Amino acid sequence: MSQSFIVDVEGAEAFDQLVIENSFIRPVLVDFWADWCAPCKALMPLLEKIATHYNGEFLLAKVNCDVEQETVARFGVRSLPTVVLFKDGQPVDGFAGAQPESQIREMLARHVPEPEEITITPLEQAEQLFAEGAYAEAETVLQAMLQEDNSNEPALILYGRCLIERNALDEAVQVLGAVKGDEHKHELAAAQAQLTFLRKAAELPEVAELKSRLAQNPADDEAAYQLAIQQLSRQQYEPALDALLQLFIRHREYGNGAAHETLLQVFELLGSAHPLVILYRRKLYQVLY
Image (cartoon, rainbow, N blue to C red):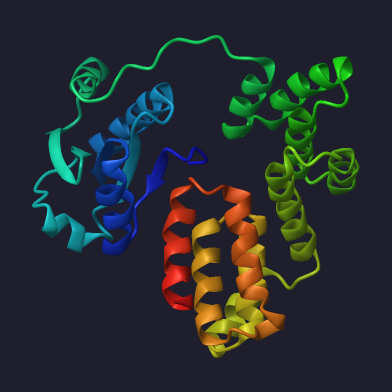
């Protein structure tokens, strides 16, 4: 999912970070599921719908039980789907089996404030459409805004990101170039980082070739870095971050510190509150210090 409040949890360390530690900040609803489980597949989109409605009041964390067997054993999960709500580091509520939306909302209401209904601005509407992957619809809203005020920098930056998503890179460069102030420099840097990854990827070997090189020689630093760039251009952030961190650990000076620099670019692209940024910034800190 593109929303920062819906995440996949991979590994025991990630569970501790994303679920246990995060639950001291906001409730975390953990969905234990498996690909073969039909009720799981029916429940998951319902949980995602509710999480979207709450818009970050709680984090929805998805655990694939076929893969994360250590975590399954740790919490004694015996049937699927199982959903557990964590607060302050502890499980406080939950249910087993698929449940109707009304019962899920009733359970959440005991622990999570119901979000207030608010009227959203055109920019917020465009941001929501962008997060849902509806780039053409977001562009339409942004174009109307920019016709009224072509100096609206948040709208310009988001419009540039829409253009990037449909690979209109030259247009995106022009739009982002119209942003001159420093007030939105972090958002601008994030958009420019995404643009950079796409442009770099267009000049690199194909993913299959890079994977083949790494299969033959896992220490091929160039192939590892180039594959990470290809993954970033496809928004496959977790494998890219992991590869960049491992490259940095193995060869800090590769490409004059390219792995470290690219890690920081991804952190800026995703934003400091993103669960992957929290996780990999901590890992990078441990390596550095």
